[in-house]
Image (cartoon, rainbow, N blue to C red; front, side):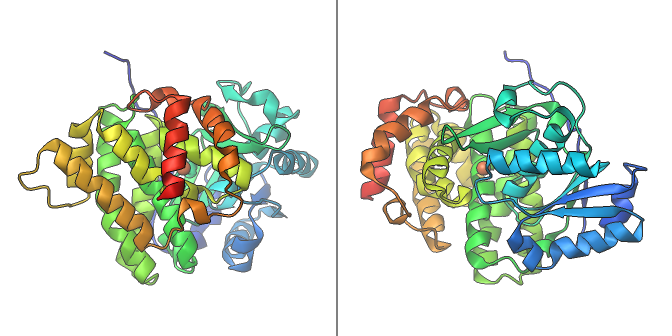
Amino acid sequence: MKKYGFNLPTRIEFKTGLLKKSGEIAREITAGRKAFVVTDPGVKKAGIAEQVVSSLAEVNFECFIFEKVRPNPKDTDCEAGGAEARRFNADIIVAVGGGSVIDSAKAIALLQVYGGTLASYEGEGTVPGAVTPLVCVPTTAGTGSEVTRSAVITDTKRKFKMSVKDVMLAPRLALADPETTYSLPTGLTASTGMDALVHAIEAYTCREANPFSDALALAAIERIYPALPAVVRDGSNKQARDDMMIGSVMAGIAFSHSDVGAVHCLAEAIGSLYDTPHGTANSVFLPAVTAFNAEADPRRHARIAMACGLDTGQLKAEEASRLLVDKLAELSFGVGIPRFSNLEGVDPKDFEYLAEISKINGSTPSNCRSISKKDYYKILQDCYKS
Ligand SMILES: [Fe+2]
């Protein structure tokens, strides 16, 4: 029996309208005066970063806004942010944005204190000690990064997504306010929501799954599967927005206490090569990988079908998991995710390389079914043709 445990160093506060209180709550974790706010141009334009900055100013924080975060965040931007935070002498880092912003903020919190290149911290348990305290305000219901201890950042030299995973990177505070997602464009709502669903599915099926991660993963699937098409249909559906936000936080806790699997390995590979948005990259591989994995563990996949609320009635586990695969493909298509072959830059000539870097991803050994480079290559080809 494998050892497992549960440790959530992040305090979570969940409430609609919480954004307006973000300064007050952040004040509870530091007496310092200088807040380094990490965001991106889209979030800034939506006025969300500004609301956080005003709330911080109300309790006497001086803010520096760093908005140079790009999708599939780059190590060079994080290194520039770390140097800037050091010059500013930040007492806390406040991330306002989606996964790219939050992962960058973790890297900046690390680099502010310890300097150097981000690549020198690649791996697990590599952070020398405490980093600048981090407060996260997620603006998408997808990443879960506000409750995880890892940052996934593109190494621009090697064109590879590296992970820095350390309990020291866990945010001190996650302020989950579904209102931040009300104005999220439909495409982003869909792709980030699919990412959250994949977190929950992979946390539940992978080899690192345990009773704690199982409970949260299934609870997340129960919320996300019905809520996702509802928020894509109608972004103003507040109940569905709430379900998406709480579901994505739960999925984040689930996979940080378990792992992800082959869907993420493929998604990170194409994300680093083609800059494909992370959630979209996950979606295009989810049905094919689920079909591949379900053969190894039909019982767990049938349980996911039940959590989705599918009518599994008298179906055998194998049949229920096949139904799940069909429904996941329908969901991805239904919320408007493009086909793999239609994604920008995708070229079958790269599949050999993509299969190779998927194979060496740190989460490949966690996938519920052993998966070889040849299997990855076949999945890439099958997805391209479908
Ligand atoms: Fe993800």
